[in-house]
Length: 175
Image (cartoon, rainbow, N blue to C red; front, top):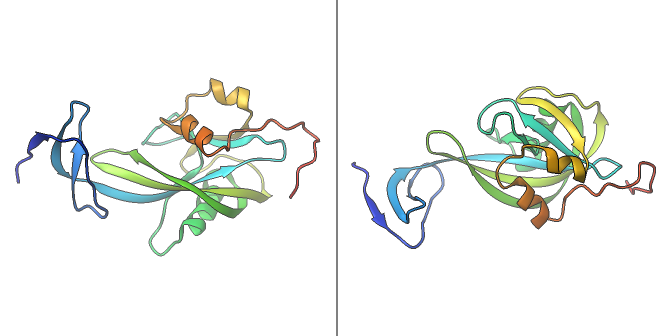
């Protein structure tokens, strides 16, 4: 089937690789197949209110800082994938909390990552980058501003009200 282009005001998409309309910046679109990949991310703060970030070690967004997370494996729930991915990328064991929201990020070759982000709390482990993460660290709000972040991350953190809070080192933090 040849690709067609035509001007549209909006776009539609479907899950599971079914045909979708992919809009271009000029307002035209092409009928293409987009493969959606279910993924998760975690918003984790330490006792000082710093935010856990990882520097991506592989595409997409290689070299950029992002929330830790990754693909959902077959048969996994979102929270189960969060626990596994955080352990694999950071060496930390977490308890998963509330679902914060969803974002979509483009990948290579027509892949779109449909990412469900969850709050999570560290319960054990020692921070150490591994697997797909080239580095892992907790960052303050000031440090966050100096990092090369993945596209849209800062806006989402603001929208969800989960930016680092920079609490005093020994301030009261409920468990």
